[in-house]
Image (tube, rainbow, N blue to C red):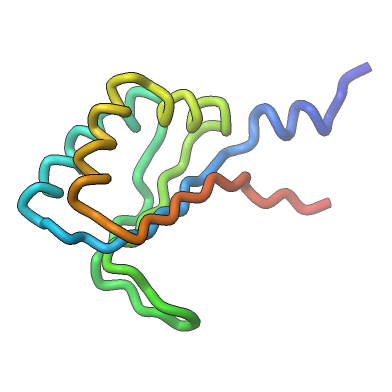
Length: 109
């Protein structure tokens, strides 16, 4: 019997919701092109990248981004890729107050 719940979870799009403050813009400028190449390699796409977001509730950070992947497996594979681990050091050394959440697309029941 086909397990619909399994199929939905396995093939549902996944989104990284990312926010952080940029402390060293000069160093940070190296991050987007390198991260973007790896994101594309894993089938991901940057949907939002905004340094001028408006906080409707709470406190906005300087950088706010949303990245979509075909599923959580691809998103996590990209995150754990040894090449991204090197690129991530650029972000870690040039930003602070980072939140990076991986969430699944909404599916109406």
